[in-house]
Image (cartoon, rainbow, N blue to C red; front, side, top):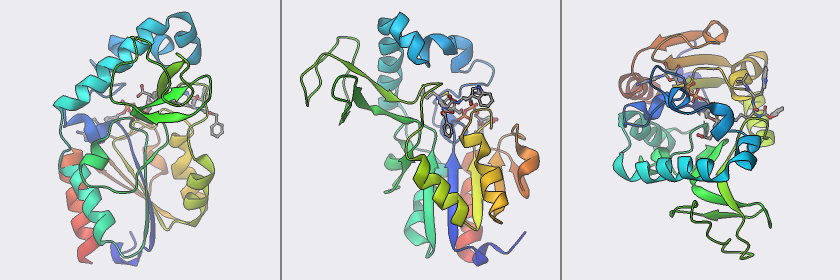
Length: 236
Ligand code: BJW
């Protein structure tokens, strides 16, 4: 691999695996969220239309659980990278938790939305949200009782795709951390970066579905791999 010091424009993609050691369930592992709940019931617009109480309750539970977890050394290491790296860095997360921010990252692009945000289906505005939604509160902006979790469900367009694709086309290193590579468009980012000539690095507990697309893979826990990689990058 090219020496880490050569890189000037880095895009990092994180997934549920980076928050696993903080105590947040991943989706597709044994005992993960999709074993506890049917994905089509809780993570599709059709599921929400069928049974809004179920979906609002599911996200209320996950929002409340955030209060009981803390960022781990992987989140903190990425915040260190943001503070000390002299090149350009874009941190894209598929996670709806706030552990990157609480770990110290200032700029985080949440492509699948955020648990602590509400989306009004009437005025379409997004509002910071720390309370429950299953009690059908009104939108702070238009006052309609039409709030939904500000998360991206299957069949919906993730946030800020244009900005992400521009960064992928311009980056010289793409790093994927703690994601199974099962969900598009994020699963395709490695190929976008590769076709733009970037080096590609996977840091994951095990080989992901797209592992063969990466120029280098390191397997193990994010809390160990990520601080090691950041230290290597900043030392070279
Ligand atoms: C550790 C670890 C440790 C554990 N250390 N690692 C057929 C083909 C291709 C695409 C499609 C298709 N049919 C439909 C689609 C599109 C669909 C899709 O991808 N479906 C797939 C099922 C095939 N995608 C969409 O609908 C998306 N929208 C879309 O495509 O719009 C059109 C478009 C067109 C063109 C350009 C752009 C867009 C929307 C997807 C929305 C996903 N939403 C969810 C829910 C969000 C809200 C919520 O949190 O509830 O997002 S689903 C869920 O999966 C969540 C996650 O962000 C996402 C990814 O999961 P992630 O993070 O990878 O978690 P896991 O559990 O899968 O993996 C964890 C990994 O960590 C594992 O590998 C572990 O080993 C590892 N790990 N412990 C390091 N300690």
